[in-house]
Image 1 (spheres, rainbow, N blue to C red):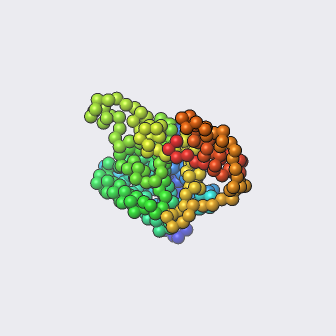
Image 2: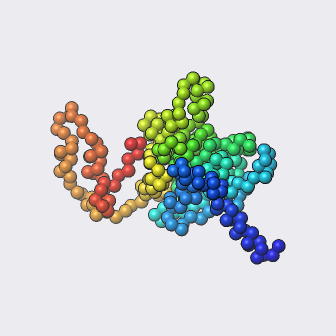
Image 3: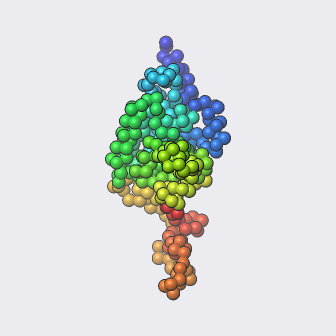
Length: 309
């Protein structure tokens, strides 16, 4: 094979990988109101800034027919890019490839991107859309989760760890987000987060619950407290991540970013007298106090992002 033929083969492989799980599975993803993993990265990062790492990684399993299966990027897209010009590292699980299940090499890619985030002192953002461990790979998949959890603890307090739950995440797929810093969720029937599903709950307790009742976005926002921010769509959650990053330092050695504002720092607000009553027994909305105190954005609106609303 000549060099020209090898280059052509390389580009053909790349084209196959970019198609992810194929047109049919991509269409099913869209039917559920979900973006694909690559579409999510494209909307999250600044245009043209994404650099993919590990595109050609393949699984090594030969059991259960996996030796005959080609899994593009092994079901997870990893790399780095920028948000408002600031470096971030990102991984996005691809539900169109074996349901985004985590295998040995899938986990190795996530671990590597977390290591790079640590070395660079930049936030790590995970876009989770995974049913859990790839059972065909057995203990190798479970070991992969252990490696990721270890990196979560190493990164803790050093760089921001942000995870978006954007699909049916269960089992091992939800431990890592819970030990990170921020969790965002899409509030729709196709997205939920729990350790084990409704069928197991019914078998053990006799209680029948739906996936949404057990681990939907509003459940974790209002009851468990696991979801810090909620969006109605993939697009809204991705925009919330961009906004969240704008408030955070890149690592524990940096200060939060500063932005110019036309709002005078010594501005007085007589409206506070109207909001806070003289009578200590009367209630008031503390949000209105916050809105009066914080800086105004370019449109004159309070520049405030509420967590655990």
